[in-house]
Length: 56
Image 1 (cartoon, rainbow, N blue to C red):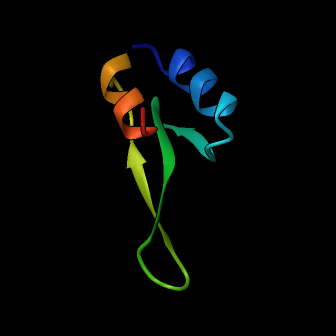
Image 2 (cartoon, one colour):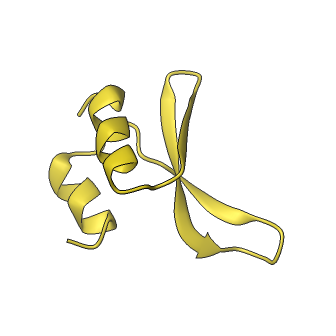
């Protein structure tokens, strides 16, 4: 799936995300520590995988 489509879905679900170097990243909502949260690279993910990651 294109990054632009992934971004639209993430935005619709209010998931913090950003693009850098042609890749799209999103907050995984898992706190790695008190200061940093985990960031997931979602570039090229299928709709099925993204829906599962979002909890559907």
